[in-house]
Image (cartoon, rainbow, N blue to C red):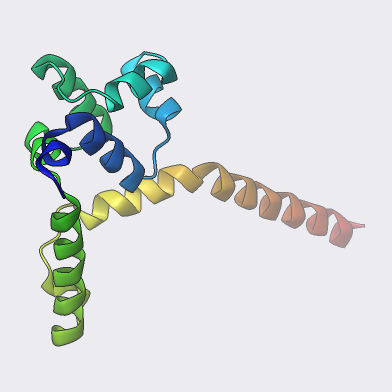
Length: 135
C-alpha cells in the first residue's frame, strides 16, 4: 500500500462503509445529504474535522478509527480473532468491542413485527378452533 493510499481519508471512509455493508445512499441519508455528496467525499484526500466527526458517528466508529484504518489492520484483526477461537475453542476468549446483549436487542427490534404477526396468527387460529369446538 503506498503512502498516498494510506493518507487518503475518503478511501478509508469508503472501505469502512463497505465493511459495514452500507451503501452510499444509506450514509447520505444518515448525514442528511445526497449520494453524490458521499461520492465526492469518498474521493477526497482530506476532510474537515467537523465533517469527519459527523461521518464517523454515522458509520458507528470513532474519528481515530477512520484516521488509523488500514486493510492490513483489518486482516490482522480477523486473523487474530480466528486464531483465538481455534486455540482456545471459544469465541468468548476474544475481546468483544460490542455488548452482545445489545446485538440481541437489535435483532429483536428488527424482527419485532414478524414476531407480532406470528403471535397474532396463533391467536386467530386458537379463536377459530374454539369457535369450531363450541358448535
